Length: 95
Image (cartoon, rainbow, N blue to C red):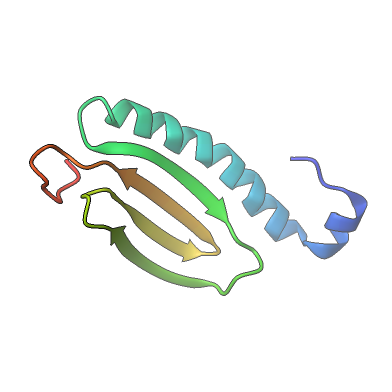
């Protein structure tokens, strides 16, 4: 991660370290999702860092009528998201 002088004054060391860790975790999650997509309904995954938003801990599922959706795990300012696709039978289970 490249940090400009202005950004280093805006974000502290903790925020920059978490951002760097998310940058490492995100491609690992995407690779795991790719492997899981071969045997399950998982289609994608990712890690996101929101330093400017409110910090809270929660988990929720978003989905629609089509059977597609996502699972989100919020850990403070970091979100881990797993997207899944609809199956032919219209079941809501991920696996």
